[in-house]
Length: 269
Ligand SMILES: [Zn+2]
Image (cartoon, rainbow, N blue to C red):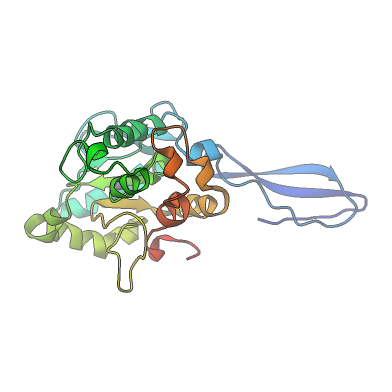
């Protein structure tokens, strides 16, 4: 956002100062300057926020999900994302479709425990334990885990704008109730602000990033601006603080994964 209102030697710049999350406040600051200047306002959220370095349970913009909408307790979303989800849930319910949130906001430490569990072989990757023995090469191992899981600091789930719905399994969405639910989302989710960032790769679709995830939906009014901010400000070297982080550069975590989303989920593809 660029605003410049010169008035003689002292120009008044109207800056859009970032509120803690998303919403902006406009504040007028008196800054001495001689000429009109184009001022690039501070971006909407901090790097710590983009990289999940906070607790969703105590962040003021986050709210705990009702068990009516979720498969377990203690899950969180940002308030506008949850309000939109609830409207979508009600619309789907009228057509006999039950949306269930299986996972929502995850902070850095939650994502780190998932990632490190996989990295060290204690948690299954592709249905099997001990990936560290099968794939000792760190970069290849990271790419294997990255088929479906993010490195801490690089997950859209940090933002409180993402939901995983009903089943972590594309096959479930291919027939019967799952197929009906997925079709409903394809036809209706956009009305509520949601899009599917991880669509099929290849052909006209995405060329890089995580594999297809029919369960993962993103609340674009917030996640769209965060994605653009990540595109400008996140760098591979910032993704660190966990086992295997030394591979972030080699796998190009920001370019290929953070930005490897369906162009329909970008504000400026
Ligand atoms: Zn997800």
